[in-house]
Image (cartoon, rainbow, N blue to C red; front, side, top):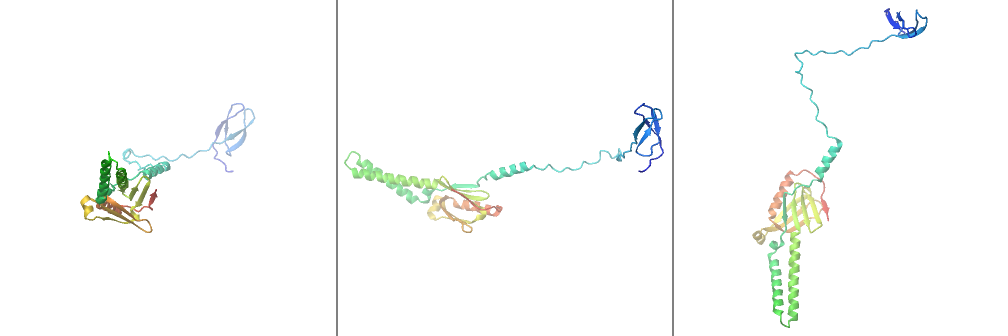
Length: 247
């Protein structure tokens, strides 16, 4: 063990409380009190080195700019919630149109109207007379004309086409809904003959890529506007995944 410098240190005897001057040779050793002659243990305290303190001149105090702090990072739960809300949020349609088959086929509409009027004529003509067959014929004509006209109207009014920033959504009936992502559609074409142009409607053809189903929607009002909306999305839409079909 290393020896210490010959510097006397004062310790207090734990037995008689007498101050005893000792020149320790080791950091810990056993000494005898000269007053009561009883031994006791002494321990030499060791000095601890304090860190150096740098003084900053007063003329430059306050001129130091605070260190830039990194912006707080989002917690994992916050990231997941933000992603889920973005994912669940539905894109608003840029354009939405509803098919109108009366304007697409005005001849059929006129035919159904004539059949209904003919049936009504037979019904009124048979009132007050013994024209049973005429009455039955009138009922059949009116019923057939009304059923065909209502079904025709339902078929057109229940068909809608919506163009969103990333897809084309085709709704037919109450439950049939098909969403085609923009990159899954090869082209969208509009067809109008002279009569369709007069009534402001036309047919819309959707040609998909690969082995996916193609679609033809008749009686679309202003089909060229749907084509232009799809072309704008085809240029600016980022890549997505595959199409979704719900039925």
